[in-house]
Image 1 (cartoon, rainbow, N blue to C red):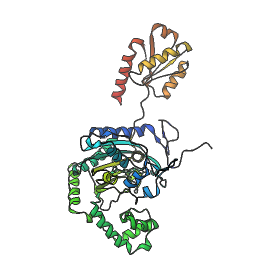
Image 2: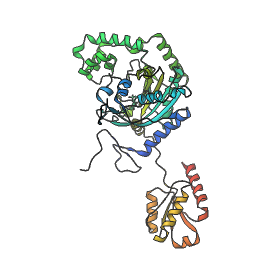
Image 3: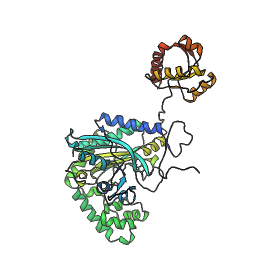
Length: 437
Ligand code: HAM
């Protein structure tokens, strides 16, 4: 058998590919990215790209030592040398905050809005929507603690979803408070679960030591049953005055802007850097346990990485999960449009002329040509397969007279176009196609 792609990865394939069931269509993938780009750039977010691998230390300090990501899911990159090791980035936030600190981005107008997209890597147990290499669109704002920034971040996520045409999305909103609030909550949880250690899973026993809040996020059925039975109080009950007031303002804006949300009093999130506002977007097409996207505030992260205090907030969508949701809702996604014109030559002497005309025509849009001479019937069939809007076959007679006999494939109508008017013809075709789209 030929070599297969690694488990937990996907190919993103061209339109019309025969086996799309476990993969995605690259044009749909690009449509999601483009939609996010449009929405984010309108808000003033600037693109940033950071390396796909980072120091292991960055991820450990940033994402946090008590998370599944750091404890079980890191792809470590081995290489020669005395070094703590690199990891393939499991998420974008830690790298972006590192880049902000390292490159003095504090000097740019604040708050600074950044966005990126790209592959992320987590050695997960693979299932529907849970991959080892997946892609995120990521938005980050650095330099403000203002609750209005939180509300705008959630609004932007909602706007991406709306522009994509998804309707079945729920926002689950919570707050995980300030560090002192979390400490109080963790002390409560340590006491509560401490008397039932024997019933906790091995992982959760370990979490009890490191970060008891993580027990609430456990995937073990036994742990979840215990959580239900004990009637664990939610994090929201433990919010201090400031975090509570901040959270109230965020909710006030969202309500005023008609963004529907459900309060989720026990939201945990899978990363340690969060403070205060935290949320997830969910969709039935992705499955109850998996989020379409999520985010939160991370005011302590910059200092955790060794920099000054810089407040931050952000979110990320999983592109593959957005595609699952779009598929579940049956939203029609645009394919890459076919060429305006497909050009072929009837004989070898005119192949070069067809190519030159096509290359010139590309100043007006997509134009393709045949690399070998073709019979007209074959050329029109080929044009059809490529979903070309029009096609022409050049013979010596057309070449001598300086014209093209162009057939519009939708109507079958043919028209003689002087070569000097080819660009005008292509412009008209492009305009008509735009009007019909
Ligand atoms: P996260 O919740 O770990 O947050 O991931 C965000 C999104 O990435 C998830 O909601 C999901 O759509 C997608 N995702 C995560 N893991 C997988 C996977 N194994 N397979 C497929 N998709 C996946 C973060 O990564 C934070 N950095 C978000 C953030 C930015 N917070 C503040 N700024």
